[in-house]
Length: 258
Image 1: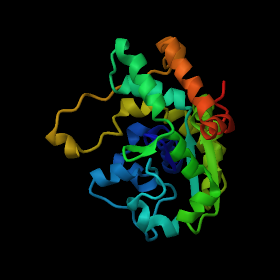
Image 2: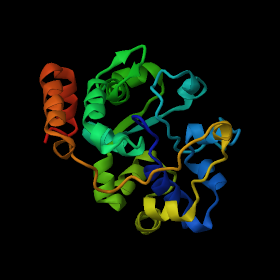
Image 3: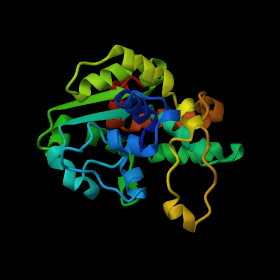
């Protein structure tokens, strides 16, 4: 399970809630990492993914498919679930998470829009990441045993978590049929707010011990739109759509044109 810029702990929380069939307050982080781990979280606990019978059904990452860290697992990856985000919401969220002052948000947003289709030494943008993970031919080049690929819009998950969680669990190909009652419980009990309140997703400090880091930012449900940030921001985004046909095609493909 993968997405651009960040791992989707929201999705992993719902999946873990279904697999464990517990509430966050009754669960430890080690149990979550056993069933729906995140690569970086595992590393912070000094763990790696097992390749024996303890191997989990789902692993989440925001790495690109060709990341060296995925090398040991390429042969055993049978399904890829990609969580796609509206690129506009990712930029708006980045402004909040980075604590960009209101008076600087327009300038910063325009810079981030310029990086959406980046593919250079400074890194890959949204366009490249989405293309690499959602093209079956490209993904199979990396994961030779790929049996299926599914793309989920994170906005659909937020609108109807139970329905999307059921689709995700069905896609994972668990030995037993999807349990709708468990799906409803997980959707009810593992909302981002309830997971946050439980302090379940508290990780060891790791490298944070050696540097000052700001406290985590709670991203509001309603993010500022490009128009609210500044008319020039929306104009820059529309110009990107006009200038880059591949980027515009991806935006349309996943329903983000409006």
